[in-house]
Length: 117
Image 1 (cartoon, rainbow, N blue to C red):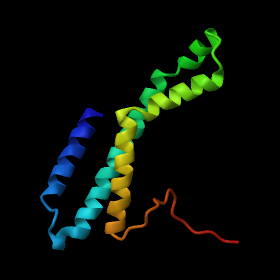
Image 2 (cartoon, helix red, strand yellow):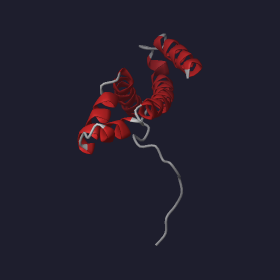
Image 3 (cartoon, helix red, strand yellow):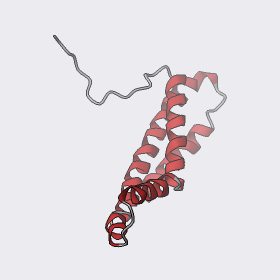
Image 4 (tube, rainbow, N blue to C red):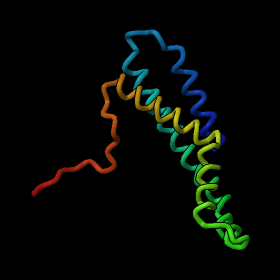
């Protein structure tokens, strides 16, 4: 993941030099959307690792006779207060605004196709 982080950093640095150039505005917005998408994939991957680190917490809570709902709330709060979660929220906002600036659809099609019936 560290190599991907370096790549995203370089992508964003390359985008910075084009800010303010109207001729490159649409391409810049598409490039920022792609960088934000890559950032979100990194965040998702690291969030899954973080959740894996907390995998034993429910068993520990049960052993200490702590209410399972309280344990779930604890784990959710730990994930949401992490810097990783906050970065993912910023990346989501960046992607949404970049797509809007590039006149791209705000939703990403998982499987483009057609429907009948």
